[in-house]
Image (cartoon, rainbow, N blue to C red; front, side):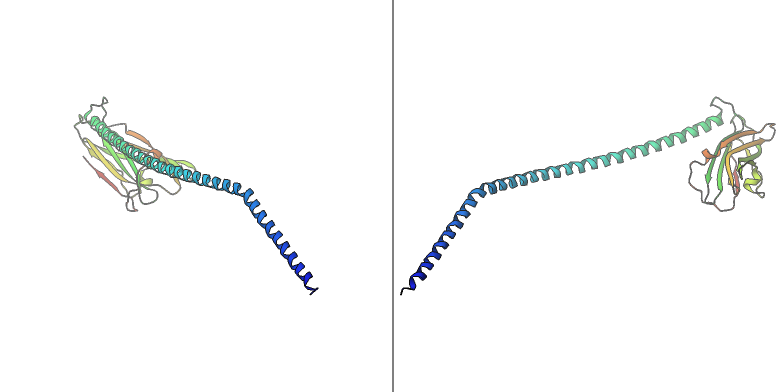
Length: 250
């Protein structure tokens, strides 16, 4: 019986310690909640504010994207309209130039242009062919309608340039071939002659000269053309590799 008292004392002491520890834990928990709850509320408020700002910025971004897409579409339509206007203007300018050229041509024939020209080299067109160094030419000759007589003669075409870094002048037989006869003309009002020129290997052309020697005239009619300007535009003309000569009379 005397031994049971210490045992009960120890048990009571343990319960007391446990009660004290539990109370301390409860006090600590409530103290933590008391001090941390305001910070949690503030953090939640800041989070809600940030979410609201993000939503506002997202709406602004969508609105900006919509305006940008609309502006890009308007810009594309404007560019397309400007391109169409430029193409239409270019076509009109080309048509005006063509009509002006035809008007000048017939004025020259009729003698109403202010100059009473006789036999003349009116125009020369030169276009590259599908073959290297081969060019097709169309030569237009005219004379005043008031000269009712038929004019005849020969055409001499020469090329000036450099061959192996040396200046040379190539006659007709060097650029058309020995088998090609000298071009001739016979017309009353105008005539177009066409043929092909072949440049020798290593030759760099600079100037083309056309000389008309009409029967009954002492001096030839001569006109020179800059090669670069003659060949600055014009699509290749699909022709055979062998140059040929042909002429049309009017």
